[in-house]
Image (cartoon, rainbow, N blue to C red):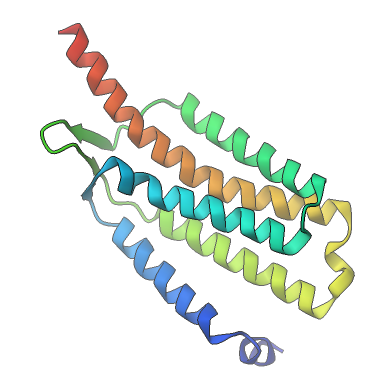
Length: 170
């Protein structure tokens, strides 16, 4: 069964998988990034998760609402945690130093394998995703994954705000 599933998987999916693994590896290293570059990955993951919801359920109101609620809740919780302690902003270079982490790789693999599993489930039993519970759980899961990316980026951006507050108080 697994062999048959893999043999029917388009080749581009394997390329995407290896591209995500590489991108996750890059994220595991401490690096300096600009503000624009910092926000690219969360925006890409947001777009990918919304595309996943849309391509699976079209404009299903419950799907979009579940995605938005999950995304918003995760971002709000992330922001409530305050600025990232593992990031710093250097005003001279206008770059953030971001500590390496394997979390982005885990999240990317989570989204990838979850989307793959949903596609396989849909291919094997086309009506299995029609239940409202499936719509809400799947869409909410996509929202959680992309919300985690956005929350992480916003917490890193909080290092800039924190530095500005410190400079103003001196």
